[in-house]
Length: 475
Image 1: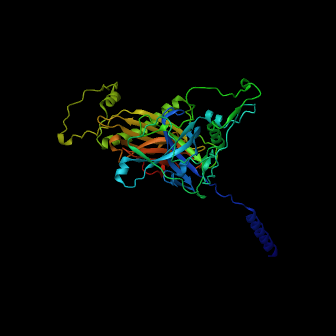
Image 2: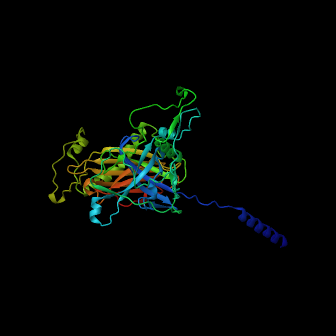
Image 3: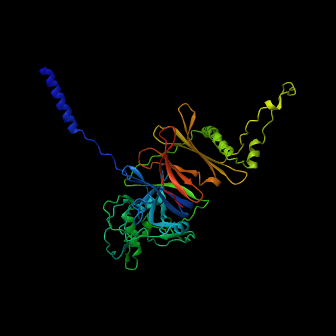
């Protein structure tokens, strides 16, 4: 008994010591903003552009980035925040926010004495090459030195912010931008602004600009009070000597403000985080052209019954050209059996003809493949349109996964048409994104109605896609 008690006591002491030395790591706090960068023209030099805030993952949950800490501007649109522009998780450049505006449509203003508009951010897109130039160390050679008068002292802005290329002078707020370019004011919108609030020590932070970039710009602007001293060696010996050129360099001027929803609108994902984190690529390359063809045929077979049912239930005849194209060249089967005897079946026993399944043609098909998690099932997003005889078209979006058996399971389906967008929005895929730094890709969709839209995140954990977040309505 004594020996057993002694062993039991030693076990208790060992357990107690182990529990005292064991450390439980605190869960990582993630502050991560998701937005959609919309532009027309070329990405590196857009004709017009804007940043639409979508979600802010903070304190373990999603918030609507358009309204979270929106005094005077939403946290996700603070001046100087840097967004990583991404495609399927891979960065293709950065966007420096210069200012933000609250756009109120005239329809909202007429319906409400105190209308709430939508916030848009505006800034400059920088390609990886341009980003490298901004962060390139200065040459150690003896170059001309520009000496300018000291800048006027400004009090430090202690408002917590996202991790940024931090501006040394934050006197220019997000709501008082300088007019750049030749942008035209939208006839259907008006802009409103608010003053800068007092410092808030509890305001979260995101990624911001490097202060050295803004300092360099300020020094260049102080030309009237400076002077230039020549180097002791020839300028031609400097490999980093700048070259003169005509026009405005890329990245120096913010693009014009994008208004409305033009047909040529492009959309890409934008991410800003309080920490500099490694990217996670979700794009899945096709093993071969035959794999793409076989996958497209398999998902088309899954999608066709859903589209046919939609056309049949609403009595929507497909466009004649599409119907003719789908049946053109179809050979007629001729029976070689003996001639059939005349039927003696009475009219009462005549079978009713089976319901005819609408014949239609898919147009504007697009198929993309992704891997949402490490070792996860291949996931595919398929979109198509079906022209109608009148009105239309029909918009269809499907998400499917390929099982280890090789079969496909449908995880999400959406079918609507142009005349019914207010009752069933058009589910338009934008991209796959890690919105909460969970190392799991979420599907980002735009839910587009007749004159409004929303953005929504879907996650595939089980067989069916689950909506995890949706924004407020944007006009």
